[in-house]
Length: 140
Ligand code: SF4
Ligand code: SF4
Image (tube, rainbow, N blue to C red; front, side):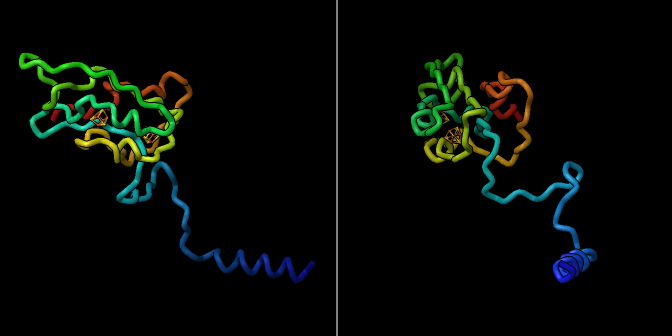
């Protein structure tokens, strides 16, 4: 009993003056890894057009079935993306998402990407429905 107690105190003493590995989150933050996959973003081209062409390949690739895309035709008067179509509606149910990144892999135009923003907690179920206005990158 005494031996175990001394061993435990020895371990405590050993780490007492070493540098802590824990961070005082949220004041201190760890640099995310380069390939971190968290919150999704819908990207734009340099000229401001939306990258998404409404092809629904991300929807088909999603194993959690949490993406919904509704496509519409572009017109020359109202062009939203460079392709024939664009995503009129784009929605991700973040409660179901498992952050596997398959939507990102499936996208032929690099429109949907998963980035490092991991602070997604909320109290309302509805706030986990990420609609296009929340996903789309703002105009530069
Ligand atoms: S990260 Fe995976 S689970 Fe989440 S939306 Fe993309 S494909 Fe679906
Ligand atoms: S995000 Fe990519 S894969 Fe999904 S509908 Fe848009 S263009 Fe297609």
